[in-house]
Image (tube, rainbow, N blue to C red; front, top):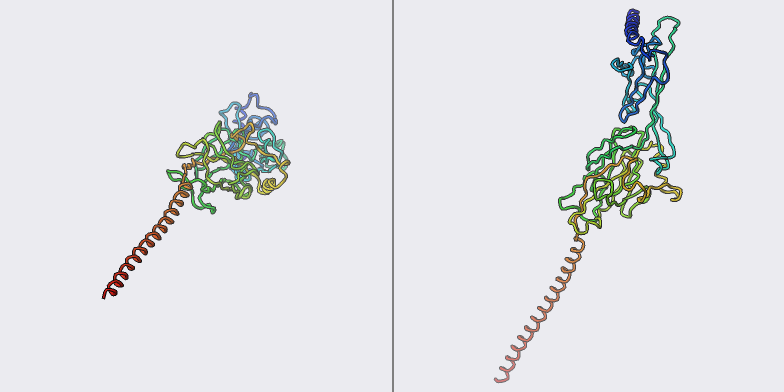
Length: 401
């Protein structure tokens, strides 16, 4: 009882002090829907509400919380009296744990791609919604306080919206940033030398041999098990920069290069494929052909991902594709693009040299055999002639006797 009374007295004291600060202020009035501002950031959702209308209705910042979670300190706001006008601020991280901790709701919707996402048949969005509610300080059976409630929502495309493309090297994580807000994760690309994806690819200073199979894995971390990774397009460029550079598509949607083999895609929180090492024709006269692999990546809810994969088995006329000749060229700004480190392929005459060496070896062996045969034949003839002369000499001696 004393605790309740003390809380009430403290709230009343704060109310009196705040009312003094708010008295005469233009925002000291009844609450309105326009009192709340919502900032849907790339890492947090930030909310701020005008304080003076709250005090006008007989409440204060300590009596406000997200979704009526008044017993949780992390669900309460912080007053900023230095701002003009004064505000109370709330924020929470864009992780499933932080979103649900204060009973905010997170739902996923699916829509036909438009605008930046017009190349995709289906685009999924995550919607975060919640309320900021007041707690009535009255202790009696009745109250004269009108409840204060502010609703908010943030809508994020599951595709990563990259503002300034950041490059990563093989095996180093890329923290994806956005320009309009996105669901936060971290992407990384790693190159392997085996189909078990256990041995990292080691590129010698002299470069890899042509037709070496390179295994690529794009992985997302900090995701819940609701989301998987989908690769829309992977391609190689002769420059680490994605603008005005020679490129070659390893695959675009369902269209694969003849030497590209798809592993998992859209089934897990990592996507995998492999291709055979090649050289760009423009590097004909250089010892090393150096290029970089880029993958345009997006997320999908795991229950919907199979339908993306199944699109590859449908009629090509009913499937939307991204063309390598479209206006975007090799710059895929509407998805997160993760990039490998440099892949160096040597000017490999190994196959030709091997053929030449094999021919020389075969000719040498045949020549050796023929030489040995000729030598043996000559030796046989000489021996036979020498043996015949001895027999002739003996016959002549016997005749004379």
